[in-house]
Length: 354
Image (cartoon, rainbow, N blue to C red; front, side, top):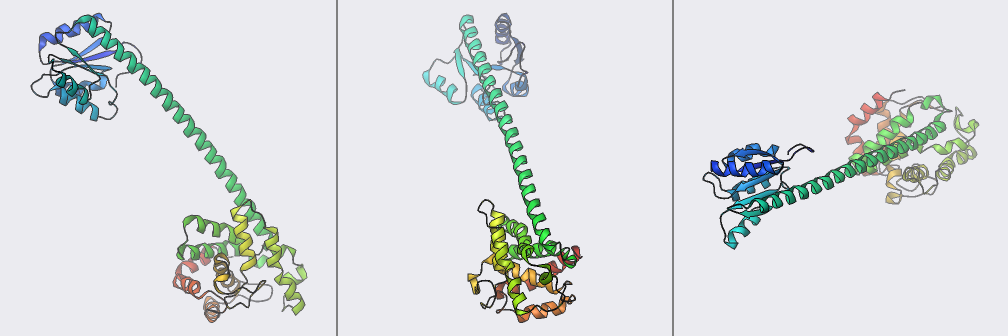
């Protein structure tokens, strides 16, 4: 399109030289610049520099109807004013001009006063239209900028929220140096298993960020029990099991989907498929899915790492123990999925090794 501001440029299209001379003289007297094209094809090559097209209908190579149709099909020229000059007086011909996309038409021989009125009117209308479009574009840019700023603020807020949750999860593991990267591995095992189970991206993300909070309740367990190097007494074991309830109470907040998922995981990741787990003795699919997923991830990592009460088991021994728990401790379908994707599990283990 022609440049904004300054004198407007009229593209005059006519196959007769005398008409080009007459019309260009009129246009120049109106205070406009002009470009001349003696065919429709040349006009299409020059359209980029025009503010308005004064177009003859009857031309040999490409008539005015076809030219205006091509103009309207070009990106960015749907609103370019096109005034067709025609010697045709039939009403149907004039309707054809409008249907083809012309903005207006003027009858030959051209009356100079009428021509000036038509050109002035369409150029003013085009200027108003361009001002509206510029305003709309500016408004859209402003909305896009504000939306981007809001999204960035939301992302920063979410990042801070997740970092706070991570720090909270680390606090529960802080007393035990032997579990330094436990939550890194366990959360990624859980997310991988959730993905392989077919959960959507948002749900997998929820598992990834909520699963580190599974043992947050250990903050409330005395060190004498939590760090005891030998077997716990029955009384001590009952106290240890309360970490699931303590964790659920700590995370009990409807304000965050991550806290709610963490609460569910905290209270359910020690339940067992056959109902012999704690704290509520749930069984089968009555155990929340996130809890069943995290149970597998948590036990595998616990078995393969050093704890105050045990040395780490080899992966082979750990997997043997877990297979023995299929259908009793663990959801059999999820355990099969875990074993099927063992290569990816072991890659996570290696990447986040203590």
